[in-house]
Structures are given as C-alpha cells and as structure tokens.
Length: 259
Image 1: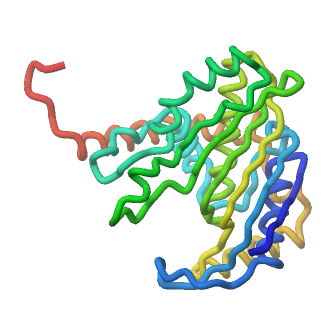
Image 2 (image 1 turned 30 degrees about the vertical axis):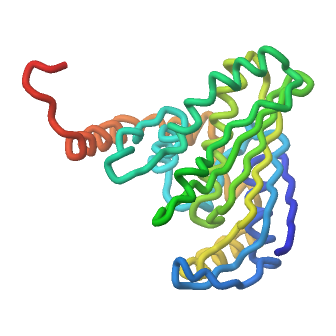
C-alpha cells in the first residue's frame, strides 16, 4: 500500500489534498466484505491550524444539520441511548470514559506521552460475528509549547463519505479538551491506514476531484464561525426533536409514577 502524507494550514486545504492524492495514487483493490472494489491508500492528513478559517469544505455528504448532529454525537453522546438497542457502542461512550485520565495525566505532566484514548475494544471488536468494529482506533494528545496537539488513528476511513465529518468532529473535541486544560489548540493529524473510496462512490470521488481542480479553495469552502456555525445552531431544535422521537420509539416506557 502506498504511504501518502498531505499537509495544509486549514482543514479543507489538507482534506482536499487527500482527496486528490487518493484519486491519483490510490490502488484498486478487492473489498469482498462489501461485495465491490475500492480505491485505497494509507493516508496521513496534517492540519497546521485546525481552527483557522475557512474550516468547512463543501465536499462532504450532507449539510449543516448532518454535521451538527455528528458533532453532537461525538462530543455530547446524543445517540448513546442506542447502545444495546441495535448499536454495540458509540465513539462518544468509549471516549468519554477515558477523558478523566487525559485531563489528570496532562495536568500531572504537560509533557506526557501517555495521554492516549484507546477507542478500539479488542475483546468486543474482534468477537466472531461482529460486522462493525470501530474504525477509530485511538486518540493521542500532546501539549507542546502551550498548545494541545491531537493525533488520530483510523484503521479504515471512507474518504468521500465520512472523512471530512470525522476530522471536523475530532477537531471540535480537541478544542473542547484544550479549553478544559487551559491550552491553545495546536496541530491536528489524522492517520487512516486504509483511506478508501468504495466502487459505488467512484463517480462521487471523480466529481470532488473535478471541483478541486477547477475551483479555488475559497469557492469550495465556508467559514465556520460567522456563517456555517450559525446554520448548525439553527438546526439544533430539529435535531433534538428527531432524537426525542427516536428515544420514544426505541426505549421502553417507564411505569407510571417512576421518574
């Protein structure tokens, strides 16, 4: 597998470079678990200033409501109630349990190399019959020069359909952790051992590449603060209503008189 490194000052700049590199250098391989082929490489995406504007790429599946819901899933666990009701885990559930250690360790020793969150649960994710083991494997945080740097490892990452939303949400988590530690936000590094596009999305990947090659970065991005964040905020009531309806449908009703 080819090893590829792309760098950018902003998230969209680095993400768009990763899409181009996957398209031009990725290799066609079999993907029998999903009964199709895929274009694949190993990709490391380095974002120098993850909070720098513009933060939002136009090249991802969905829009402001989908991005806001995913942000809430990762940071706030709005779908954790689905665990045991069709879902075996959520990223939030596995991450949240380990954040107290991250804060304790980095307050104990800001230069620590031990601030690692293991998202992969080997006992659960390798059991026979498990068809959806966690793609996110671990998160490591470093404080260097007063900044919190984040390094993500994915075993598998769908480039055109999932990667941007993953990166954005993990950067939002990085911002929250940095704020709780009293640090500035440093660099963000996103490593995917299998950075891929499924055969069903080859046309989508090609469309992304055509836009990246024919348009300026400004034409393919939005500012997050001052524009897109406001749209995401406006979507919060609709998301809350959707989640409430899902809870009513999934969770058993409590007996009368029970709080």
